[in-house]
Length: 65
Image 1: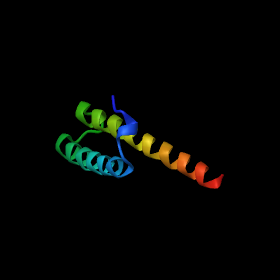
Image 2: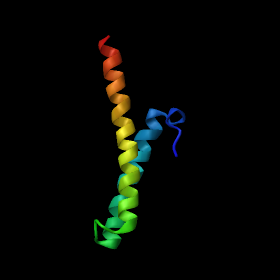
Image 3: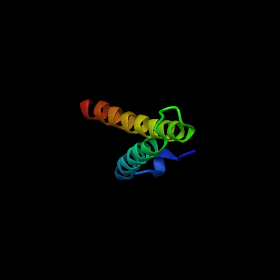
Image 4: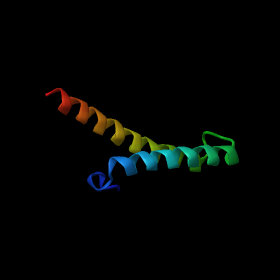
């Protein structure tokens, strides 16, 4: 489990980019969206994207106050 407070926004962005690249490469090799490795990476990527969106939403709400 990731400790989100320990991950900087810059690191979060880089992790997302790396996982997107890895997902594309594994999909090219496996050729199926239902492959277990593709699904595992996709789910991990989803978690990081959700955290990125949560932070941006929180920052936007804070800026409006």
